Image (cartoon, rainbow, N blue to C red; front, side, top):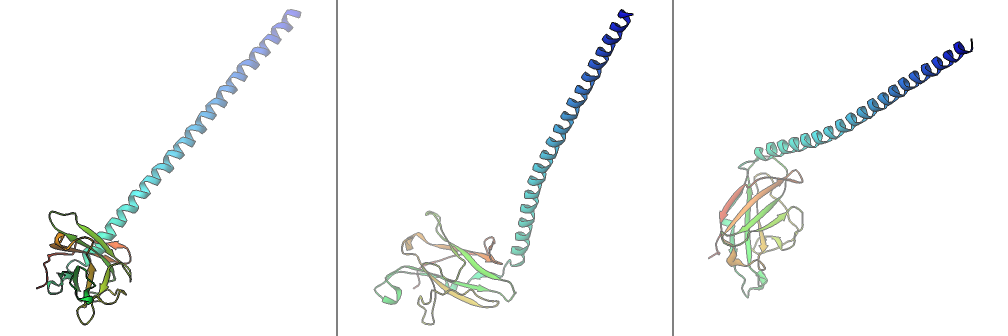
Length: 203
């Protein structure tokens, strides 16, 4: 009788241990599944972030290409008003060297908010100047007498032309024989080169 009771206790203990181990394994399996699920979610979030950034850059690039393509041929340099002036004793020129830039645009309506000017030659490092606000150091509107005038810059509207005088004394007039223009539209959208011309000293 005592042996039967002992056998029954041993069987109960074994049965408990088996179920306990099975429960532990099941708990560990559940933990593993949770960890894998969390990792998959994190990987998915990272992938979505990279994909979103790529799509945003792609859309921005397409918008820029489309907007800039729409104004192709609408901005150009007027060679009659694009030339170099060497500094003289004439106080109207402030003893400085100047690059005159005649900027003209066609009749198409778009929001021109500035432009980049690149000037230099094939042998010297080009200088880039961003003109995208109403006041830029060393840049003036040319007045009715043909001299550098107001520093309050205005960009040409549809069908207009405006001439700007850029003080290039620090750069050196001998370093310039060409100039390029790059329109800026819709606030900050910088387009590709619209025109490039050779420049020389005004006779």
